[in-house]
Length: 84
Image (cartoon, rainbow, N blue to C red):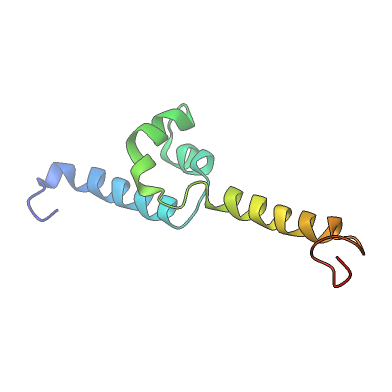
């Protein structure tokens, strides 16, 4: 961003701040509030591409839940048990 005009300096700083916060996993709702956006939808419109791990927490939760669920259903005569 070396070619940015001085009048754009604050905008570049603001954009960098929002991008870093979202990449770090901060809530889009919180970042929207910090930036003064009227809605998180506006924030997502500009910055969604900076959220590469979006959905990762949900996938991890489901994977963990399914893993535990399999363990709970492994009864003494199931295929996973020594007797099965």
